[in-house]
Image 1 (tube, rainbow, N blue to C red):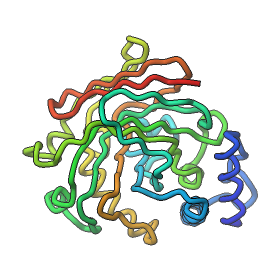
Image 2: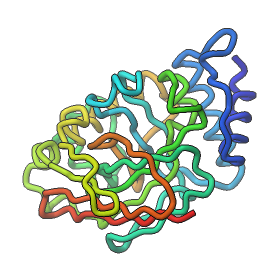
Image 3: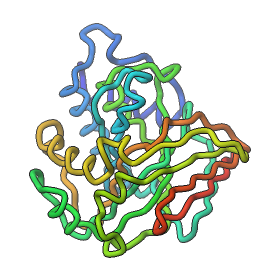
Length: 268
């Protein structure tokens, strides 16, 4: 497996919004270690083009959807200034241009005040955070029919398309951050009809727990990557990921008083 060649192929698929052959199905296959090598080449390629990483997305933290997609452990990749929108209110518009088979995920997003380290417990980790927000991640894949292996998804930008981060709530507003986010209930509706509902515990027993487990996994699988002060990290979908099309109006409603629901209108 030529990491640079596969990275260039995936970057071309990103630029051209097109499907490519599944890397894991090619001669020699694709291991998880090789996939993270590809992801690092992609990170370097994007920075060379002038894009700036501003944090990370963690995917497949929701255990309830693992059998549906055939991926049974979290994945992750950088998010970018060009793909992250920090909302001032609760409404956004998203063009579907450039996205391949897009799906919508309601998530909990963290903002870091100081750099964390692996091995921290949740109390120590909370002290590194500046804010919490509800967000929408649009995920997409350059592989047909959403069929892939975990290494494929790691190489494919960890399926990240765009991230919309809602109003930021200071961590001090939460008395028991981990417990409150784990106990969160959320509904997701499209064009006035509820499509799904989920709880924070779906996400590796809670978004703060997912964050802690991910930091430990980073050391093993992507030691060249680190979280910096100012970074944004989104922790994975609370519901299933739902197919999107232009002309839809999506609404989320978390039941925590500090976190506001979001509205997203999809455009061509």
